[in-house]
Length: 571
Image (cartoon, rainbow, N blue to C red; front, side, top):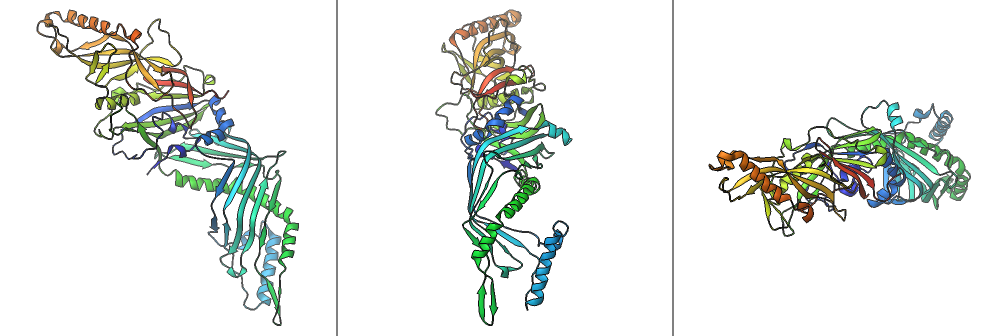
């Protein structure tokens, strides 16, 4: 089973890159795709130690960008019934005196009151509508390689959410409990309850570490580890509006004497410090032991299948009056590991809803693993690589829609393409000057032409490489390809396009074609010729805008972007 997430509901720490490369933020109205052509490791993300500092100090801001408000919250009413009966004998080792007293009272009542009996208990607890207000002084996400080594983990990653709260106030309309196995005891509890913990001197601190890894089924294993907290040290107060107790009465010769609830209330208030200490103890033990177990159970429900995001992408070169549906493109979590940096690998696919038979070409992908060492890790926040297979797949589908059938030139001429253009690595031309937001690539094209020469057929197809500059748009909304020159040494002209007259001078005929190509590209640099459309790069990640620190195409065919958090990058 595949789980799909709306952008604003992604798992915030570990799936941050699933929101990357967002072509359009609008939610996908029809994410079902019949035939997905998966491109493994097509997108890879590296969050450096410097980049993780942002999540250490500004996680609450990130969640705020996603519409998650942390400093206050609301919970609907809830009810919990113990799955199994509680047998007092189960507590005889931990609380022997209390169990002894309980049995004495129960036996005495059973002996002296005719018809009285008490079963083992099965409590039900009902909590009314509740809310909290928290004054956070810290809310961060950190990696923990030391804990990972201590646990003996060699793959996956250990992260931790760290909270520091100056004061946490939890209020509820009521807390009521009763015993399903002994309903005659009635209900007991409180109305209008407020529990406050922490203060300026000793804030409440919680550290929730968790281990994540990809499993053999393409899903994500999540394991919440033991939680550290200082509940045994923080100040705590409990207030309530009304005490709820069962009605007790003693009848003597027809006259009833009722229990004075006001005295019960006084007794409870007098014992409040002891009760708070017990609450503190139970909460601390719950946070350390039971809470991780609950989180692990919920994680099994939530992360049962592979993690996938599907959304729309506007095809490059799409005309304004084109009413065909946008491409569907998706990302699936493939691998995650923590080795000096947090590394996330994603499988990707791009499909055209109106062209389900289109298949990607294997040779259009990279030739080996990505190289991320161009910029030292301490000099950027996030590294992002795209396999050329993904870029070429997008160009292929756009071409098959005839978006790239022609590349119009500023002089009115056109390059009529006969095959999808292919992006690949090329060495930077000698003497060329690049901005950090630019890199050179080559684009292999097949162009149809009518040469008007007796030495060539009426219609010919010439293959050659266009040297182009991939550069960021001035408004930073994406990246586009600017044509620089034609590499005439890469030209290929099949013999079938040479006429009988030209067959006696094939070498000279091909040199003549190269001369025409040189003339064609001579003015490109001055006229600023560009390929229509743009790639939506760099992305926003979890609502964080990113600036390009450096961009490059590595020799194996990966577009690598070294990114900084815009204006507020972690330092």
